[in-house]
Each structure stands twice: as structure tokens, then as C-alpha cells.
Image (cartoon, rainbow, N blue to C red; front, side):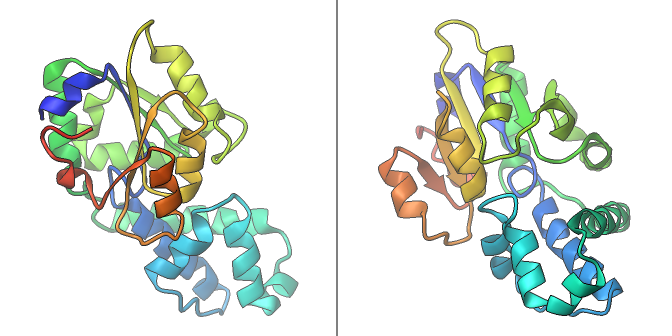
Length: 226
């Protein structure tokens, strides 16, 4: 992985990029709906199109899908708390595994002593479970979780906070995201943006025009790439 030496600071999203937990978020929403008597028949790609653009998108589209759910429980905070509980249960029940290429990249960064950081929307409770099940994540020394910032992605606050905290003068910074919402956040920072996703988001050509590199997974990055 010669290319990693071109950068002195790596910024990583977590869910769907380093670990497969984005699929578990999807299943948690399905379980939340099912527990209230509604069958969310979306496939994973449909979920991604709803969830990965702005903070309100999923709420609006689930309520549009199930008007009776809105009547039953108009407070999204209540439903979101039920989803979080379902997710924690799924994390304990099922296999949380690393995404293709993630473990190899993290080990290479550790061996090269290159600074790296996770910038995630997930709270500490969920992160702790994920790290317990995937010890290689403990090679990442700095974790910025939802408790550390005010405005969610696509606002750039979380990434700007990480860069201010960790970048040294003259450093080249690179950031990795797997969603349009996260990419919009990253594009508002000095980091080189990389989108890692197999979902065919319609914005990908536009992102590429803005200088974003796109790969289906971390294992697909060429040795001399980036």
C-alpha cells in the first residue's frame, strides 16, 4: 500500500465503510416498524436512498410509507429510540464484521504510524459494542462520535473538528465516506474526498467532477492510487 504514505492524516466514517453495520441499521428500522405492526418492504438499496442524503429523509419517507404510523406515534424521537434499541440488540445478536479491505488498510496504517481517526454519527454505546467485536478497530487511536459535535452530516462540523484536532502544518489529509450525506460533509473540508460504495447513487458522476475518487470497496484501491 504505497499510496498511504502520500497522506499524514486519515479520516474514516464507520458504518458501511469500515464495518457492515449499515446493513444492521437497515434491519433495525425494519424491526422497529414490524414491532409496531408495519412491514417495511424496502430492500437495502431503497433504504440507502432514503437514509443517506439528509437527517430528515428517512423520517419523512417512513412516515409517507406508513401514514398510520404517523397517527400512532407522531414523535419521531420515540420511534428513533426504538430503532436504537433494536440496533443494539442486533449488534449483540449478529455478526458485525469488517468491510472488504478495511482490516488490511488499518493494519498498514498502524505499521506505518500514520495518524487516523474515525468520525461517526454513531454514539459511544454502539461504537463500544462494534469495537469489542472487531479488535482491529482499536488500532485507531482517535474516535469522534455523535457526542462530540452538534450538527450532523452533511454539516462539516465533525470533520472540521477532527482536522483542527489532529492535522499538523503541511499535512495532507484524506477522508473516506460511503454515503452522499457524508460526502457532502467531507467536500466542505480540506481533506481529499474518497467515496467507497457499491450503491449506484445518482450523484456519483457529479462528485467525481468535484474531485472525488470512487471505489466499490477499500480493497479496490490500487497500490499506487490516490
